[in-house]
Image (cartoon, rainbow, N blue to C red; front, side, top):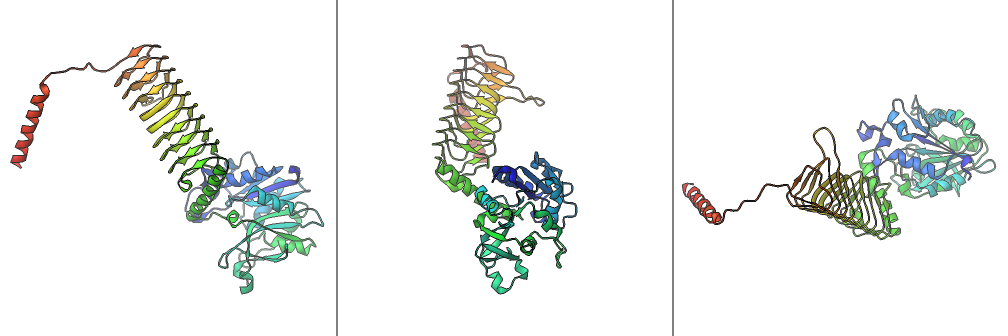
Length: 453
C-alpha cells in the first residue's frame, strides 16, 4: 500500500490505574523506550502519511513523547469508539485509504503483522474491516472471534459468550484496520453499551456487515497481543522483548555467551563478531562496533565503542563515553563524558570523567580525574603516548602533553608539558633499622593488652 493511503490512530488516553503510578501507563518503558514509542515506531515503519495519538486531559507528557505527531484529547473517555471519534478531526481530508487503529499499551506488534492487517482492507468490494486475532487458551479473557473461514462475523465479549463461544480458539487482539471512507459513517452509528454506556470499536464489525461490507480476521502471534496493565505485565513483556532483541542480535552475528543474562535496549546497535559475556546490562544510546568484547558484569549507557575494544569485567561506561578502536577499559573502571582515542588503556580501578585521552595512552590503576570543584565540572586533557602512574589524581582543569610521564601517587594540579616527567608527592624518608624497634614495641603492647583482658 502507498503510504499516502494509510493513516494510524494510536489510543493512549488510558490512565492505567493498575500500574499504581504517577506516570501515565504508556510512558512506562520497555527496553528503555516508552510503550507508546514502540507503537509509534511500528506505525512509522509502515510509512503512514498521518499518525494521530489520542490522549487524555492533562497528558502533556504523553503528547511530548508523541511529538512530532499530532495529539487529540479524548475529553469524555467514553470507550474505544469514543476515542477514535475524537481523532476524526485530525484526519480531515483523509477519505481514501485505510485507517489502522493501534493501542499505546500494546508494544510488541510487528510491522509484518500490521502490514497483513492493512492489506486485508480496501474499498468495496474488498472487506471494510480487518481485526487482528491471536490463538488463546480457553480461560483467556479476550473477546472471541466468531468466524466462517476468514470472514469475521462478530466479536463476542467473554462475559457475554456462551460456553461454545468461550471455547473458540481465536481471541480479539483489538488492533483494527478500517476503510477510511466508511469509518466516519460506522462511528456515527455506534450505540452505547447497555452494560457500561461506553462506545466499543468491536461493534464496527457488525455495523460494517449491516452496511453490506465484509469483515476479515487476520491471525497473528500471541506475543503480539501482549498488553500492559500492571507492573507484572510490564515485567513479562520485558522478558519477551529481551528474547526478541537477543535473537535478532545473534542472528546478525553477535555472540551472547549466556543470552538470558544479557539485557539490551531497544536502540542498541551491535556490530558483527561482538562477544558479550554473562550479566551485561546495556542501556539506551549504545553503539558497539565489530569485534568488541564486553566481559561479565559490565554496565553501558550512552556510549560508542570502536572496533576491537575490550571492556570489563565490572566496567561502567556512562553517557558521553566515546571509545576509539582497540581501547581497553578494564575491571572497576568508570568512564563518563570522556573520549579515549585508539589504543588507549585504563585497565584497573580508575575513574575517567570529563576527559580526553590520547592515542596509545596508558592510565595506571587507581587514577582519578578530579573533575568537580563543588560547583562546576572541568576537563582533563591527556595527549598521545602518555604514561600515567598508578594512584594519580589529575585535578581539572589540567592537561598532560604528548609522551609525558606522570609518576605514581602524584597529584597533578598544573599542566605537564609534552615529553616531561612529572612527580608530585611528598619526599620519601627511610630510617634504617627502625622497623625492628617498631615490631618489638607493637608485639609488647599486644601482649600486655591480652594479659590485662
